Image (cartoon, rainbow, N blue to C red; front, side, top):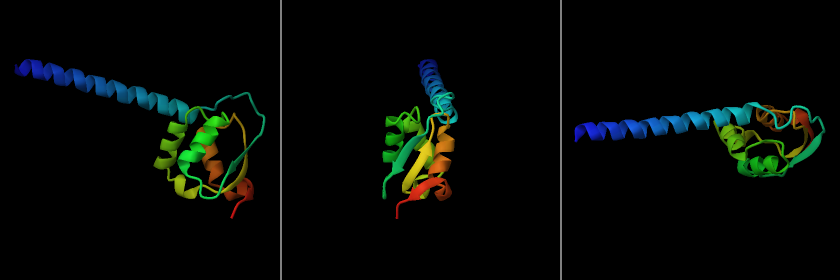
Length: 116
């Protein structure tokens, strides 16, 4: 009986570890690579006053500037981006990584104008 419990625990642990590794690989891939490294067309992106990180993440994905709003949201939470988002209009491209986009959206000097 104890051997069966150990086998079941091992199997469950292996499944959990595999899922964590798959998630980590997908997260790193989504946060470190641009949507299209060849598309340099400038895209205007506006953050409205009091926008949440979730709203910004979803809007970026809708404009096809990021691959995954969830990965961007997690990145933002891990790097305190939510509290630093600047309301304003930014020029972004699909050649930017989500990390570069996040850094742009928290830098007032990179905004075409700031909404106060």
